[in-house]
Length: 350
Image (cartoon, rainbow, N blue to C red):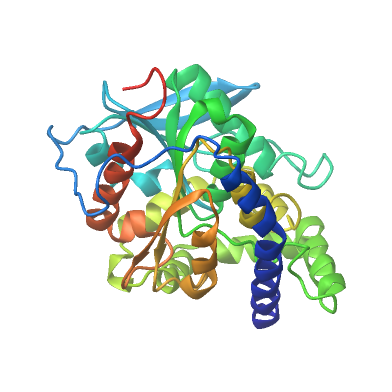
């Protein structure tokens, strides 16, 4: 099944790129204003301040408590967005370092980490936990808490939420960095016709029966989480007990199982290859990809670097699906470089 879904994903990506080729050409001919890098790609920014310890805070959004961490008092704003099953603590190695150059916020998406987890089972499937809602959350957070346009930096499925947020409200976004973004291989448009009925049956079974709860209980164990992370990381030695606790502890809170089961039944919504050509011309996108990612192989990701909205596609040797945690010494300078490239582009922002 996985091999078939991967093949379908590659086929869909190729056809999608062809469909959007004329649109990209039209945009180029129209000479729409686009952010232009202001420093050489080879430049490496040297932090000017000592490490800034993060503070944990809560924010009320549409009646829900949202947890986030933050650090830094001035400079460009950066909002860090985790992936599936993650939370703000997956950026614990990045927030204090990035705060040397700006104001940094790592957020728990609704349903994840220590944010509230409203029950999705009493509502239509995927009506709470979807990319459009998470994009609304991010844009509201930038408006109410950050208070100025921000650079959105995302990992895995967080990349889709970040891109959607930028498309929905470009005035709030100075640029997007996608680190190993999810290609959503089980999206309904990427599933081979033959397996679509079986995928739907499996998703409904997991979401609505005790089988799903038993499945989650088996996944939500320290040993299982560690093994899953070791598969995802290029260097298994980087999967520490601290990391496992960061991921597992909030995942054991009431409501976490229902969020998990609702999201794994989510086969609709936006795709990266639909959002990238819709990206406003004033919002640059940079993609970084760990070459050792077994879940989202870099060979499937390279075509995304061809979209007009993407200024650079950076491959990270030996790194897996979560480079921000596995190789912060590599990712942090690259994130600061992106900020320096575009910090002077957004009107009214330093």
